[in-house]
Image (cartoon, rainbow, N blue to C red; front, side):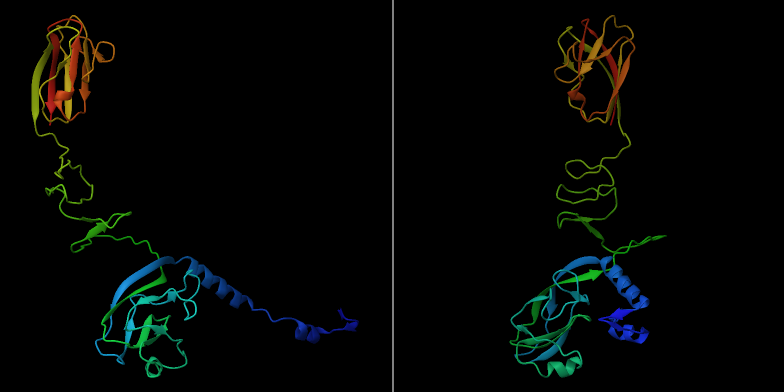
Length: 290
């Protein structure tokens, strides 16, 4: 191989070639990037207790989560690039931590109101500026998102589930518990507008007949009565058709029932069903389930 007119041997090539990471090092870096990208981003806001004491009091506070990241969730935070924001009159100015020293020695060098952060462990060392005893902290972390599958019985004390788009929480309790209109429930059974559970099993059966007094003049099947299902059958003695529908039913828009024909309606109130007929005084028999 020639280089500027000179011949280079293998040792020369090695000397002038840039050093590259070996295969195992490159794999470890790639694996680390893959692991970080698989973690779930989490923005944390919490209230932290500050040990009691006047200005000049020193101490240590631990965040709920360790490994605090920068504002882009890309790297472990540093003093110059951090997502951590404290709202406090006791801890005012962050000082870069000397990682070669232990926390106790570092705290001893702080002035009033100064603090240091070990971002990997989530520990804050401080020297208070005043006697306040609480502060809020906001910061970004990454946590491992794990799908868990459980077998057997799992008991949760006073468990609540939070709505996905609001902070409304639903209390988990017995499905047959009567609730008020203000109660937030988990919809495992139908409930009415007052929060009362609607049992899917009919409890009441009512049978009756209804005739259309004057052909062409619709009539209600009956007065208001709660229902879930109504079975209607045209009388077998009818000589004309019966028409079933709503409050505007006519022979042109109703469901036609010839003598002996039947229909089942899933409906909540008997009074919303109307009949019309071709022949006066002809009608139906019906069974209401509720």
